Length: 161
Image (cartoon, rainbow, N blue to C red; front, side, top):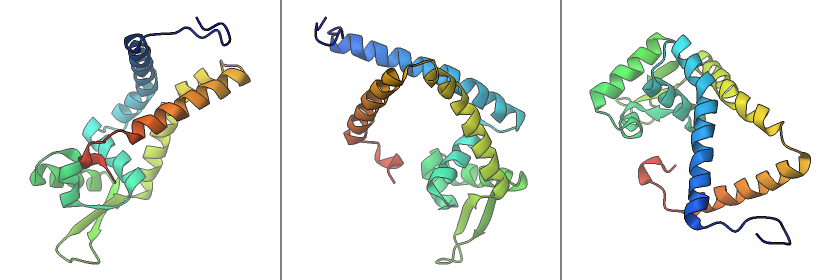
């Protein structure tokens, strides 16, 4: 232990284990309500992934969804068609290439994603409420540092903006 801060000196493997346990707990708790909501809306995980991608990145050509989803063109087209039929996305002609089709969230799709994000964050907000103000500041500092370092590592080029 470091006497000045009362923080134990852990090995890299111990720190990695702590981060893995946190990741597991976070995913389990934050996804529980989220997945329940997705099932109640009759959405597959692939559909939810497309909706969330569109929510954060905006419209995309159907061909671009092939790369995002890592599926064939027919599979991407079928997914888009199902989402259009459910009124979750809008398919429209590209203003730059009349042969290309763009996909974007409909208002209903945006509302559905907003609701699912709120449910996913519910547990996290409840957890945050259990900490003192000082602990919250420490956690925010550490997670900001983790985020900065994680973002500086080489990312998969497929998922870069």
